[in-house]
Length: 231
Image (tube, rainbow, N blue to C red; front, side):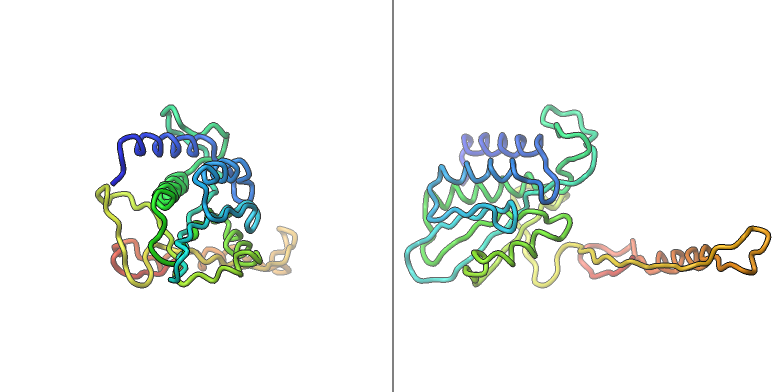
């Protein structure tokens, strides 16, 4: 059970992180802050610059058992914050709009618990991953030799979910949240003089037709309890 003192401390940390967001791959100050906090807890191992700016901490029971890894994200988004509360973003054009400040705080809170009471068996790694938003961080972390040497038996990620009552943890087999896969569609035309359109190829109509048909695939009436695909 979290104590009032711990709740106050973690709330202050979350607000500090919220006020000082950094973009993907540029989370150096965030990583330094997290690693400094983790170092005070005296983990069994502390890795920095994992896949760039990533940070990892190990809490080892010293007994046989599975290796578990819990992961959160360091980066923020290139979005201007319009909130007016005291701890709003201090960086123009950058803000924590996906809750990564909260995720980091949750994982650090877990680190405090593991420091106070080591796992009963096996090992627990905590990963503060860089560059989640642009998709580059996971690849960089997986390519890091130190990560390759760990080989966890189980990996857990988490995400805040607005609208769910506070204090609940939701689990579901298979997919949970939405994901994005990007594609590039090119429409090629040929220029011509306005008086001689027969010598050119105008891709505008093809583009309009594509967008109309692509948007028709979207299903906005499907709840998050079901699977839906769209563009």
